[in-house]
Image (tube, rainbow, N blue to C red; front, side):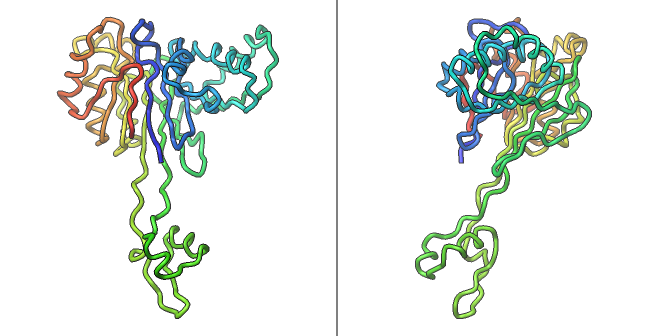
Length: 303
């Protein structure tokens, strides 16, 4: 089952020709989830050959422009393409008010419903769930109400040893039960333990997106032991005072969170415009948490 992250934009407030404003796509078994939607998101979707029609859920962390100004152009394109599938947007309630004001200026008929789901900025909350995935929102520490998002696979069924299906003539209905963890009783009445019939499935994969935030240890229990953490690293350590004033993080602070949470890998992003060369930013993070990589537009990470 696929579980991958594509970075569409990794800069902070101002985009550049090389780095667009914040946007990412998570692909879970060919279900695509858009996280934030800065300027140029739809251009980046085209560059990365991600089909617009596959995006049905959009998560907006907070209402700073570099995280949602691309949303209205994307919706306009959806309308022009004749979209019919409903679109779910997870966001602050004020975004719906902004959208309701702008919608009167959209000249084409909207043939799909836009369903707004309002985030809880006070506590963790399950905001999406299907048979394969759960998405939890959790509060971050920023100048305006801001949420992070945790994407976690549900445990998969056990893998039955294929050679036993034929050799033991196991009926189809029993195969389903065995995959669910039950023992198997033969027609002769012999019980065969599930552990002898199956092998463990791959462990569930997990990804946490920590958008704009100051250093905030309250998120550690939420993201503990996950496979991949995205954490903003707007500044280097010599700009720690600026990070505190703007409720952002330094690369060292992001790495400290990753280390304390025992995550397997971290990707940093949301860089200040001052950093043309990202290597020093990455080096600072790696000085605390070695398994760190730097986000770049177009980067794809298989989780």
